[in-house]
Image 1: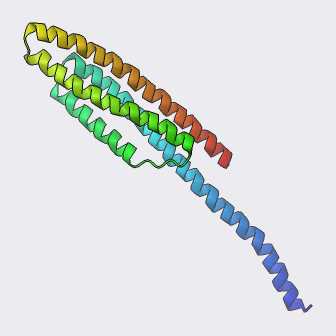
Image 2 (image 1 turned 90 degrees about the vertical axis):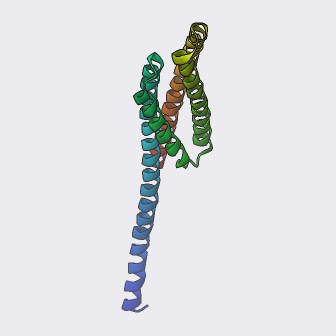
Image 3 (image 1 turned 180 degrees about the horizontal axis):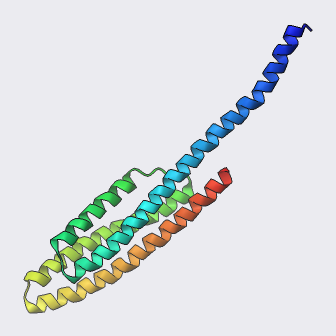
Length: 168
């Protein structure tokens, strides 16, 4: 074998492992970035649900226009967050499904609470008392659901972190 041919073979054999390592680095970096995006989504949803809890209890104390606007803004932000999520793992999708289901229940509770607050402000005294009791029940349900969403979000966060550690 000629010297020139030997150099080509040696060069090729030394470049192949470098290329393989480079490909693996690109793939793992991509997977790590996807995991970071998912974690950012979970963190943002936890922050928004926590904000929603605070504003919802303020809203129930006296339905102010400002609190209602804040709740609508939070609701829009959460809806947008859920619309753009992409989870591949079946366990991640399952947890996200639970979160979305509970969030839809929260939206329904908010609509009912708005209705009861309108009755509290404009209804007759007997209707106001009944609406206030029902609003308290709705708030209790909201508290449970929002805590459930936060717990499931933390579970999803932990699951994503485990997948990210496995990727490393």
